[in-house]
Amino acid sequence: MTRRAPRVRLAPSLAGYVSLASARIVLLNWLLARKAGGAVLLRLDDIDPRDAAHTESAEHDLRWLGLDWDTTQRQSDRRARYAEAAAVLERAGRLYPCFESEDELRAKRDLRARRNQATIYDRAMLKMTPAQRASAEAKGKRPYWRFLLSPEPVGWHDLVLGQTQTKLSAMSDPVLVRADGTPLPLFASMVDDLDAGITHIVQSDEMRGASAMALDIAQALGTDTGRLRLAHVAPLTDTRLTLRRLRTDGIEPSAIVACLAQGGNEAPGLDELRGAFDLANAAAAASFDIERLRTLNTARLSALAFADVADRLPPGATEAFWLAIRGHLERLTEARGWWDVVAGTIVPPVIEGEGAFLRTALELLPPEPWNGHVWDSWTGALAQATGRDGAETLRLALTGEDHGPDLAALLPLMGRARAARRLQVAAA
Image (cartoon, rainbow, N blue to C red; front, side, top):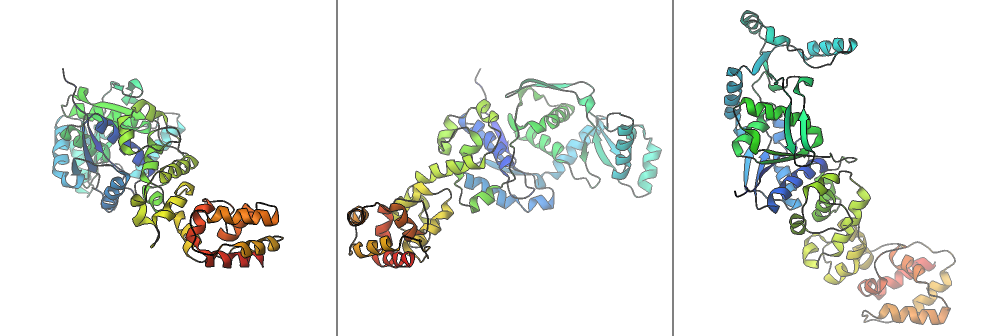
């Protein structure tokens, strides 16, 4: 029998800009599908107007990361479908109305906690009579709706964790529909997944309980969940960063992808990552290390051609400039500083005790035109005259930095007049 290609959905959190934690889950789903030639659906959880405001930025950020999708689904377009599914659950006796306020629920939880009892919902509203419900509604109260969880555990074979089982009896019946008729994410997402024919779902291990409840909801809707493959990966830790912030800071998308999807300090492209993708290995790489991201970004920048970055470099920047600096950047935004070094105005520090050496360097500075050999010829003559190398002193005087790109490449770009002025300032 031919194995069916995966069909996944990307569902980035819309509670603000896309976070790295959300981006990792999206990426793992995408890699799983695309490696096997499967289909990808982008689902926008935009029922809440506050979330809807971030749909455009989420799509933009995911495309910047290099991801694509075959179709888009908006939850705001599917309200009628959720109401239909809720009616099915209500007729089956699995969705029941509740009227308790949050204060009443909090008081119940506090009381159970003081009695050392589990603080799950006590299902008091299941005992409400039709007359009591009518009375509550007559007073202007509108019910929200809870799902009656099954008494039996829910189990599945997890693609990462193996055989998994969750006791629903240890959980509160979840609210699926608010009093205004708005479906909660757990409910809307499961209905969407069933209708879209989603076959594989990769999500954070923190969602394992929600997965069990979602499977119970699907079964209550009369769906065979045997075709659905779940995978729960360790949650990403130690970061509140967003894709938007990293982009602004000059981090390359390929470095982010590599950091989220694999270990090591290499930054392969998305196509290479897709071909070598292994969910078990990716699931284990859950900690986020900003230093590792910087290392990966440096590696990625050093491999980029001028054409890849020309439109993001300072106006006037040349290919020679890019080739000189690209192996010495942690972030592309640092190129601005090096462009000031070779084509702008910087004020180097006065270098105490080096005045005589720098004045000699100025006297021996060759006339233009300069080529790629000017640095070697100049420093060679200076070494003969002074008996010392002095490269570190020259670097500080010419660039204002104690490390950076090869001066043999920078000096011709800098030009004689600019170099001479900086030697004079540093020697003062």
